[in-house]
Structure formats: structure tokens, C-alpha cells
Image (cartoon, rainbow, N blue to C red; front, side, top):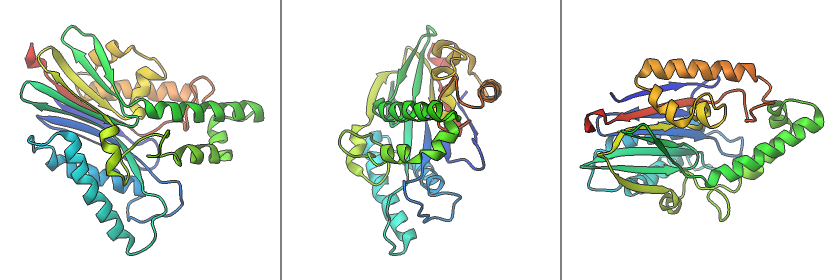
Length: 280
């Protein structure tokens, strides 16, 4: 059974997720480093991920094009639309979003990932393989360690340090789509082919789990389950809700971010699943 699950981390949700018979994706929106707001959504990040969501729902039906070409076509459209919204104003920094996409094409599974939304592929043996664009992890890792240092130095929580030393995050964000920085969907068509792209034989795989980093904390930050256990326990929306509830409680227990360093108490958390149980 294919399904999706999403929860806002705070006041509104900048994630988008979608799953149908042949494909699934998750998108994690991020606002630019300026205070400028162009769209009529709660944030430009929400507008950006929502635009890509609506575009991909239709565009991914065209299996004559690989995922990266579909994204390249979409980049032209999203940039034009956002510029139209600006009505001639100078756009200081485009919003962006990470993306993870999986699609069944014949006897193969087509995978694409850019930035920090991981994909877990579960084989029929129960073992899992993680696919993701790890370049962004260096940027985030250095930022978080820096904020953790300031938090301990000032005897404040890392969440307070995030606000007090916000220039640390801004400095990292300014490396977006630049040499030696990190790549993400924003306004540059050139970075799309720098994402992770792979086709794999579908016959030995049971399911594909696509997550934003707010949900993957279950196994990659809080380690509530191993990746293998996590994939095995996710079989329906009710499972996704139950596991999210466990994550929520773990986040509350570490409500100052002292044991599990992160930017905020909790992030938007989304999941999309493609289940190939009939393969076996």
C-alpha cells in the first residue's frame, strides 16, 4: 500500500509529500536568507515546495523523460512564476527545497535526491540501503557543532543559540548552489544534475521510503530504531503516526537540544512510501 504522512513542526508546514501507484516524492521548503517575502503563502518556502508538488504530480507521469529532465523543465516554470509574483521587484534570494523522488519505470526503480531528504530502500530480505545527497550534511554538521559550542559557552540551549547567533546559519545558507557549498532546488537549473540519480532493478525490493529530515530523525538522530527496524515497522499511515508520536516524545524529553543537537525543537516531518510487496 502506498501512502503519505506529514506533520507541521510549528505553525505551518513547508514540507510537501505525495504518493501514487507509480511514484512518490517529498519536498522540504526553505526560505532564503533575506527577510523579503514575495508570495501570499505563510512563507515563500511554503509557496516554493507547494509549486513543485503540484508540478511533479503531473510531470512525473511522463515516463519518456528521466526525473532530472523533468526537474529541469520545472525549474524554468517555477523561476518564471516566482518572478511574476515579484512584479518587477528585485529578488534578493530565491526560496529553495530539498527533494527526494522515486518512480517505478518498467522493471526498474528510478531514484533522485538533492539536499537532505533521505531515501531508504528495503529489500525483500528486510535489509535497507540509504540513498541521499550527503553534501549538505557537511554544511549542516559544521553549523550545528558551531551553535552547540556557543550554547555551551553562553550556558543557553542550542535553540536559543540558533536565534542569538543566526549569522552562523546565514553564512552556511549563502553557500547554496555555489562551488564547495551545497546543492538544492532553488533557481539554478545547472545544479539539478549534481543531485543523486540512480536506476535499480525492482525485483528484489519491497518498499521505498522517502522522508524529509524532520522525520528521518527517528533513525538518524534519535536512533529510536535502526534503519532496518524502522523500514519494517512502517506499513501503513497508522504506523507512521505511531512512530511520529514516539519521535515527538523523544524531542520533548530533550527539549533543550542538549543530547540531540538540532536547529529547533522539531521540524516539519513528512514521509511518502512506495510499496512493492507484490514483487515477492
